[in-house]
Image (cartoon, rainbow, N blue to C red):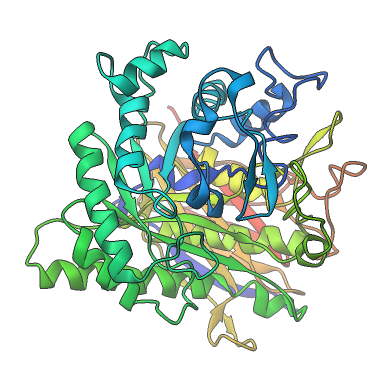
Length: 505
């Protein structure tokens, strides 16, 4: 069978935007085993003096995660941050209503700040606008960011943290449009409290940046109206609005499933348009950017979660074990985020450990990489610099929910500082390899350093504790440059990273 062919033209001057490193962020919520038995397990053979698992920290460092959203998620809408600071023996156990568990509060704001430093990442802090409001929000900013000489900053110092945490990025609540949310609000109610909270938080620390809650998914009945109303109230006081999306392959249609990144693309375009509509309406010079602070594949664990007894401590919730096809869609989603690097400045794969996560742990045992770890790691490590706007021509297919799905999903990143060019490419074709010809004549003297491929004969292949390398990338791809054209054969249904560097004469 002859291979179909796709072409791409790359030029240094075809730039979308510089990439904000926070686009490779992640998320840790007090949910399931993300914190307890995930990042934190005192008594584990590899736990450090604070109880943090060093093997998990190493994997987070391997992903090069720049920012982690914390402490939620639905959890934050019922969370009293004061429960998680001060002497451990004084911290209360609470009924955690969002996920129906017991929260021990062993890990709180200061511990998480310590963990983030160890993992070489920053904290994207969320405030509770469900059961709490303006007062708790401004107090938390004062506790975390004010140097000294006030009640809350001095309290932090008395807890052993002389230096302020200087958290830069803050979320104004979580998914407040959702009826499932503790303290659910209408767009009008949320817009007002978010505006007032934003004002006082910035009065405490004018250097912070704020994320207003957008819709919890594009499928919400209130979508678009919600964003427009919330931004009407908050436009002058926030820098970002959030987007959340998860995809599932419930009907076991792989070709349709891996096309779902087209829905993500449409979602980003829609929210960008709403932001710009409000900008026009307000005759503002300011542009609101996007924080895609929850995205992933999520559906495998639903049945198991329904069977859990309530009021346990850190039960195994949302523990999706990912397949190879999930990794292919995750790759397509990462490429989609890069294509919108001009407006998507923050993105958080939800979540980081155990809960719908690239990293899994066993209590007292191993930590290992899920299939989705690899495309996330490759883009985070190699996708720094400027996002290019390639001119792509690809054969297409139609699926149940999408028309004109390109078999080639691709983009490229140029790092001028390092003289590196990286092409990220997915071949969505389930049975045929795809010949990709990339014109890089504008990149004189660039040669292929490595062509990494993630492929598997079984789309349902998974990594588990006993077979943790069942799905893993190799660097035997065949990309090569000849007369300014990269020729590469992308194996059927595969994730590809083609790394090029300038030859030094």
